[in-house]
Image (cartoon, rainbow, N blue to C red; front, side, top):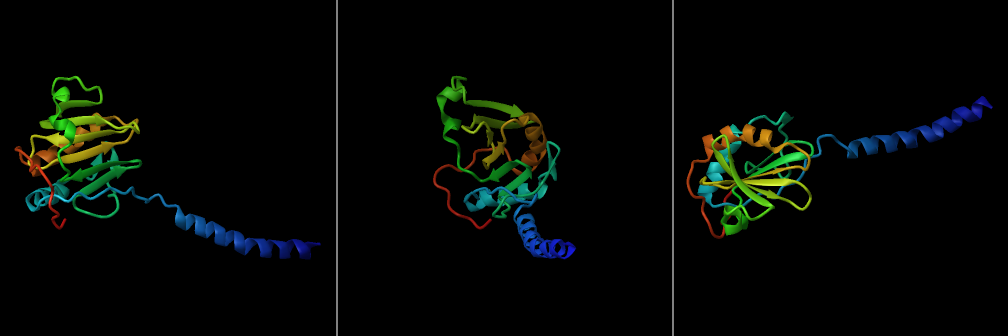
Amino acid sequence: MNFFRHRLRILIGPPALVVLITTAGCSSADDNQSAAVPSPVARTAALCRDLDKVLPSKVDGESRHDPEPASALTAGWGGPEIILRCGVPQPPKMVDPKVAEGGDPDAVAGGVNGVDWLMEKQDDGSSRFTTANREAYVEVTVPKGRDTSGVLIDLAAAVKKAIPKGVAPRGPQVSASP
C-alpha cells in the first residue's frame, strides 16, 4: 500500500510543481500599469525629459516604478499607480468658462505649493490633475481613495524646477523623440 501512495505522489507532484511555477511566473508584484506616451513638440519633450531627471523617488510614501512602455515622458509610483504624463495636450476643461466660474462640479482649479492645477474627477473615481500656467502640461492621475494633496505636494518642487511658468504650446502636437 505504501508503494501506491509513493507512486501517486510522484505522478501528481511534478505536474503540480509545473503549474505552481507557471502561475508564479505569470503573477508578479512588479507588474506596471500602462500609460499612453504623449507626443509633444520638441521643446516640450525637452522640458519633460528635464522633469523626469528631477522627479522624486517617492510620492506620497510610494516608491517609483514607471509604467509601460518605458519613456522619459511618463512616471509612476505605488500600486495602484499614481501616473504622471508630461507633454499632454491642453485639457478642454482648462478653457471652459464654467470651471473658471466654479460652476463645474467635476472640475476645479487651484494651486499647491506654487503650482497651479486643474483637477478633474474621472468616471472610475480617480482624479486627474493637469498643470496650468506652465510651458508644458503635466498630467497626474491619482487612483480612487488616495489622498491627492500629498501627491501634489511631493511633485510641486520638481515641476517648479523643470517646467517654467508660461504658456504651453496649443494646437496639434507633433511627435518628438522622447
